[in-house]
Image 1 (cartoon, rainbow, N blue to C red):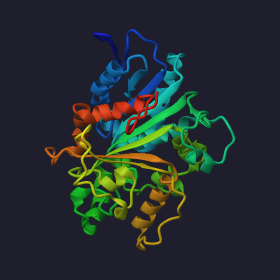
Image 2: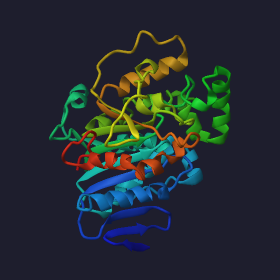
Image 3: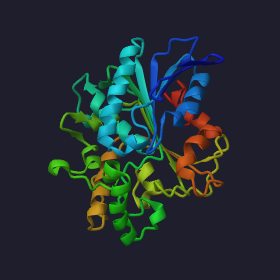
Length: 354
């Protein structure tokens, strides 16, 4: 079904997905928007429309449709395979596309990381360390489905998983509750819950999130991440009781910044932003001798070997639903314009490359 909203074209498929583009342009930049657990394509539709209205000559937005409702419980890998095929179908149907970006919420960010590892193809031979450290590179070392990788943006995504160590704030850091939650979540959220709590051991393999911080068995998870010109993390600094600040911004506990007195006048809900350069440091020697902390440290260390732009947001009126409403709130306030800047040719704070 096609619906016109002024100059914005919207095609809604029978499966519930939607494509949004300007009816007056032939955009060459595909933006894939990925929903979180128990979500759907409609979660991002408003954002898709705003992207196209703001930069109509730049982007063609696709809100993913293959992983909705209970299908989001099938596991990060299964969802990733579905989405990879979906993205390839979109690319094949739009031969004018040349660039690709991802914007994902919650678990959708993990799915997006899986997808890019699946779609990545190397175009030049280059040491991984050099490609991750090289800023503003003109020539990509690889492509995703044949397209140039531009922006990788996640919103409240548990990049370090949800396994203890206060990663799920509503458990209050109580060890007994965190241990019990592993079993309860596995029942409620099935395979996806196992991936989040790193309790999956398929055929004796390491947990999926550990495998996803390296190039593993034909999937180029890290090479693909390094290919993006820009990687941005949006995180709730408080009131997100599902995904803690540390796991969504890929930091150790002692690295969390002080934000209470921060004022960014142009974007009032953005309370902290930082451009973190690639770090070649080895794992911290301060890690406690527990399996949980060791795994988390491995994830932080590996993901810190590339640059990230980290944005902390705060919505003080959303004290119990911050995780769910961050999508809506970011899109209905100046934070959305902050995100749109990521697609701007001119870098203004955190800019979106087109």
